[in-house]
Length: 431
Image (cartoon, rainbow, N blue to C red; front, side):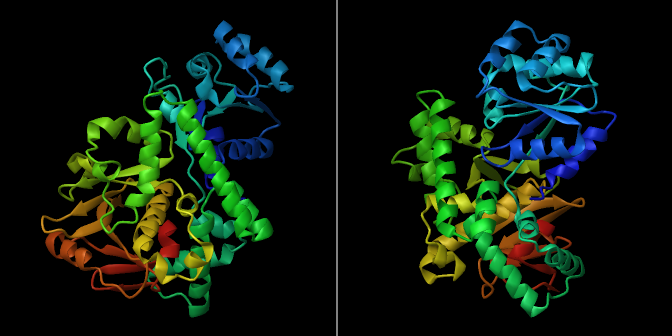
């Protein structure tokens, strides 16, 4: 399956300024697969080593982190001759070995001719612990997210449909009705399947939603296990409480995160570490409210007001045990959950396309779901789960702040009206 990160990896390989690569991302987003496929296609051979399945690796790095010492040992352990410029060295689950992370500094300084990439499911958590010596300035860092809608469509063999969507987005021209309906059907499938590679693979091979849901459930179990295995004992229960509560909060009309909904009397000081752990692990995304929609948006964020979304909309549906048919056929029984589910979908698409998102509220309660900076402009984005709703809050924002244009996401076809760029939800990846 095509992953956009392949383009990044290709540029990384050929860059004269290449550094050892750290690939971040939540568990099961495809980090190892992407690196292995890239290595097989672009290098003579791959030396793959996993700290979880090869405990002796930890002892090796504890002994010495000089690349000249490590290379022959890694060759032996991987069963591959490591050749300068021709071998991709992959160290997986590197969060288990602090010394291995530190060694990247010396690969950069003393052995830049060796191509090395490392991955870790909870590396974001690990490097924020005080004991870790992070090689600042000596590494390239990239985060891999679940497959976005474009990657899902390409995996389904819909290359021409993706091309047509991009043309219509650029020109604000309506898609032919048949193609629009087909894309909406894929969009609803994506809400259920999500972008976790194993889930997409199982869906494409079997079209069996029960198998997809089982795969999602297993991923959710692995997340819960990680919360216990890689978290401090006094934070485990809090982290699980927060994670379980996020899906509940997305079912509310106001999706802003509220501590009181976790338990009666809950306060920020009690749960902020748990939220931080979930964010650093890549399991959860947090976006902040901005006081004033001015550049740079980061300067105007309100650290006490934020929303949280899970990393993948398919996992969200699995965690809520949503009936597949209710999503595919837009059951009215999902009305209370639709808004939060679609917001979650949009958030993941924006992040996959490198947008840092915020949201805005007025003093009188108007709310714009997302604000992003694109092409030097602040773009407000309103999200609607259907096509028969008005964007009153977006209208208030436009009247107050007069953006060059705004985006309204819904199930409507492409158009441009009253300063609003109307974009179908399936085309969010174009933004």
